[in-house]
Amino acid sequence: MTNPQTALDYAKQNRERFLNDLNEVLRIPSISTDAEYKNETLRAAEWMANHLKNLGMENVEIMPTDNGGHPVIYAEHIKKPGAPTVLVYGHYDVQPADPIELWETGPYEPEVRGDLLYARGSSDMKGQVLATFHAIESVMKASELPVNLKFLIEGEEEIGSKNLESFLKKHSEKFKADVSLNPDAGMMGIDMPTITYGLRGLAYMEINVWGPKADLHSGLYGGVVHNPAQVLTELVAKMHDDKGRVTLPGFYDSVRPISDHERKDFARLPNDDMHYLEETGVPALWGEEGYISAERTGARPTLEVNGLLSGWTGPGSKTVLPAKAMAKISCRLVADQDHEEVFKQMERFLESNAPKTIHWEVKNLTGSPFAIADLENPGVKAMHKAMETVWGSRPFYRREGGSIGAVAMLQSICGVESVLVGMGLPSDNVHSPNEHLHLPTWYKGIDAFIHFFYNMV
Image 1 (cartoon, one colour):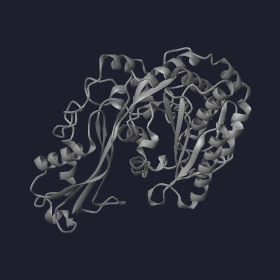
Image 2 (spheres, one colour):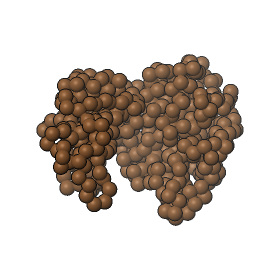
Image 3 (cartoon, one colour):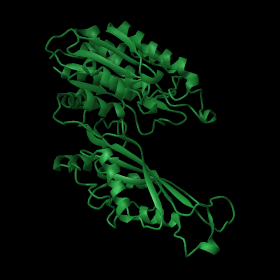
Image 4 (cartoon, helix red, strand yellow):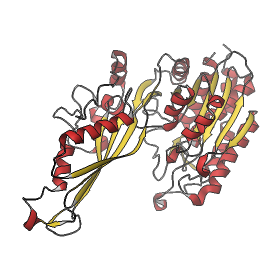
């Protein structure tokens, strides 16, 4: 293996310029959810494409997506026959900055204060994307790239990658690779390098219960008409048993068990019970028996009530028997659950438990698949070694409770598994005012990516 020291020296010598590059793209308010910023979002795409061209990447394209969506950037550097191909994933869109008044400095006016760089998108994820670019530049200045490269930089991650699935189905061959490097994750804390190898999927539903044709006087009809609000809350209460397990029929049938090796890794994680108590302020924790908190939030499926609506909720009293009630329900899913099957399980649950005194329906609002990486994947091993070299300690392994659509889509459509990492920290205020990036960790991340590319061969 080529000695990476020359590339590491180059990265260290160019830190100021790397930071200036990041500041430049952070000034572009590429807010994908707001049509008023469509031109700015396109400007960010063009900035990324131009930067890739300047790096020496070839066949750089700004590719349109369906429904007039924000484009996907493609580029490649295929120069090493027989060498592995790494697909670098990222996104150039950001969350809105609201509420603006809570920012100490302008969200699109990057400012370094101490070790922190403040700006919207600094952590999520322009900083992470540029870390890969800077690592690639450093390697190319030191020697030939030891791997082949492809890039997929999208502009809709912050709005659920809503056009990415159809895009990838049209261009699946173009994005095939041996592994995807996805830095859209983070670390458990400073000096806690982390590899995220699993993401939960999602099944999101709306349940409607209705009885009388209009709200009724509770004094005249209470005790005669079954109250839809009572029915719905009783149904929701039945969705868990006294051990915290979900009671939808067949819900756990396909759930992949946690291996003994994984349980040891979960036990290493710093997010123990005390962490969750301090983070949430609740008096006590709750959940499925037989699992520690880190397992419950990463490797076990859940069912949560996201909202309830019924009857009179204004000030004062109104003695009404509501005509209808509604609940929003989400299920976080793990390997090997399918969100369409979970929706059918909810239908069967309601068929078995809903009384004949009311009408009901359940709507399938949205869903996304789980993603889980093979820990024996060469990309995971290369990143493990890279992080261990830079930080001097074994990285943490975790399954993330949330979802990143591109990871599952690349796996299911293109057959590409992702190495999900990043330099973001829990304290970065991602999606909130005063988002920031810890620069010492960012520089270490660039070094880790340099080692990763050399470790792939």
